[in-house]
Amino acid sequence: MADELLRRGWMRLDNAAKIYPAAMRRSWTALFRFSANLTEAVDPVVLQQAVNAVTRRFPAFAVRLKRGVFWFYLQHTDRAPTIQQDVQNPCVPMDLKDNDRFLFRVRYYETRIACEYFHVLTDGTGGLLFLKTLVAEYLRLKYGAAIPRGSGLLDCDEQPRPEELEDAFLRYARPETLPRAEKAAYHVRGTDEPPDVIHVITGMCPVAELKEKARSYGVSVTEYLTAVLLLCLDEMQRRSVRPKGRLKPVKVCVPVNLRSFFPSETVRNFALYVNPGMEPRLGHYTIEELTNIVHCQMALEATEKNLCARFSQNVRSEQSIALRLVPLFLKNLVMRLVFHQVGDRITSTCLSNLGLVRLPQEMAQYVTRMDMMLGPLSQNRVVLAALSYQGSAHLTFTSTIRETDLPRAFFRYLVRAGIHVKVESNNPADGKE
Image 1 (spheres, one colour):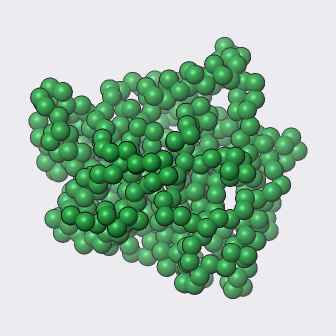
Image 2 (spheres, helix red, strand yellow; image 1 turned 30 degrees about the horizontal axis):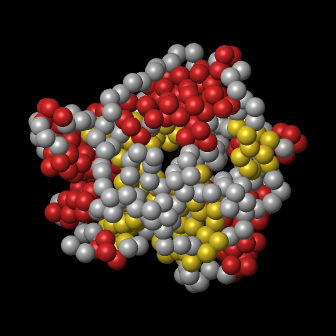
């Protein structure tokens, strides 16, 4: 596939990516971000050299989005994006024209290196792999650091492997499918900020305390955080919605890395979502009930057979002869409608937890902090991303509304539960009571 991309000069979008060009708007692009803080200020000249080298190693990232007659496609380029100074409001909508048509951007500020990705390009696993490889290459060029490559770090002197560019959805799709229809969920409302304003609120807490609390309920950290989100969202809806019969389901979109179920080395999209939730009209829920509900729903939904049947439905739709012959402008109309009906509309927020990031000691001695954040979704205006590094869990809310009710309620709950949380924000006003 890598040789084919370089030979032909273009590549099809993977199955998960196809919806995003149709759904994007000037005020919204499906973005996410990883960042790493170093022990010393970033040298922009060396960083650009590292970006050039790593982009060559990731040919799936050295592409631009192009419009065809029947589908969007990715066109290869021998260039790499020019690095940019970081900004106060990360993950603002990406203007592809202003970004030289690249689908990711690399930014720096003082000791921080950050990569922001359009979801057409990759998922969280691929995005984190790119950032880690970029930081390792920067440290090699800047300090001569001898960082072993292998699991989680690619060698820029190696040729790309074909399996890194595969559309793994096509490889594992089966004839059995499972369409899924869900009710519309409750959404957090508030005062809209301009498109170039993103509120970022990060809570930092000890991983050990978070794990111990989750263990006390017999669930994983992701399941515990999901349950806390559901509890906070339920309370918010009950304060704003009357009568009780008008209450909507409260659900959290939780991405699942399909590589855990279907072996693949692809750096492109290979993730799906499960939506654990609760029905508020049935009454009030305790945290014990919600952790149990989330645990059972995740166990039921996040199975090899169920996940495969769900993404196989999307693959079969893509492979339909009738759909393939429909012109792109008509496909876009249909996909926008589908995205509105089964995208953000059926969940209240999103929680993406990449878990614990491990780096070789030769690299970790230079990296003091790592973070992940999601760009706010099309209809879910407040979302949460989590990442842990060197014993500290960083829980980052991003929001396009002025009100900070959900992050406040969430972190206050964790503090009342005995977890020590330190909160920081890109907007000083967010810290005021």
